[in-house]
Length: 344
Image 1 (tube, helix red, strand yellow):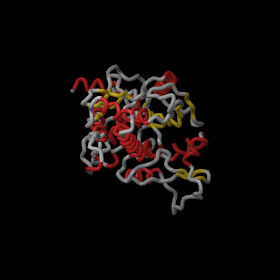
Image 2: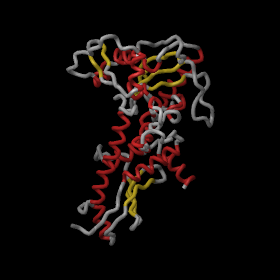
Image 3: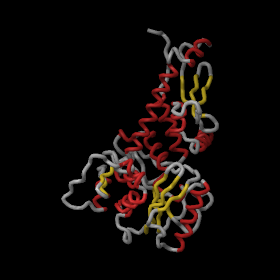
């Protein structure tokens, strides 16, 4: 057995980085729920996946458009369209639950994530008359909201509905939203088709209110339309009423970290060979964040750092790139670095 000892626990350091990121973006994180939800990476990942990275996107509209709305909301809709087309930031028009009110570690189960997004993968944006004010995180709220499904290079406008619950009961669990998505974009919906399922056995039709109640209890309901059964288009909820896709994403980051640990502590790899050649037999590794917000590995004894790439043309699945872009995307890194500098 080798006497060489390598000190490395990237998952512990990932939690520390996630805590810094939570602080930097001022995310609610109160830790009043069961201890297994006191997970800063889970909280950070919920925000990462719900945030809409600014990028130029093609807009595709459903057959629900044009929707009869107020003149104010028409101005707001045009603004959102321009932001998507030009690659602007639409996040100020999201629900405030993006950063506050929703919290994976919170005591109230139905407040741990955006149920509509977690269940069906649908975002909603407010359509106020005025643009977001300078220095403000969010725009004015509005009486009309736009429901969308976001992809890397496209955004599907599903519908616009009134925000008043008396006008639109069960607004965020209306099955009509999913029906509209499937009807207009059947090829995209096919990815969620549960092949082999012939239908759902129900004694009575499932109502929008039923969807809301089951969603708030962490129960996922397949969706039936046109003789096909579809899995939850947003991957659904866990029994803890957090988003399933967030848990999967969080676990993936932890997996990347374990694989990187193996690479850096492998006696046959370049890193250990280089350290040994410099007289470092017992290296101490830690995650390092660079000034541009990118990540890497630092070894304390030699005081040397290896920067992870954002993109590797020779290896699309480069694990260092995957780790870097998953835990600290390019849009988030600079914000966290600036916060770290001010509070370190």
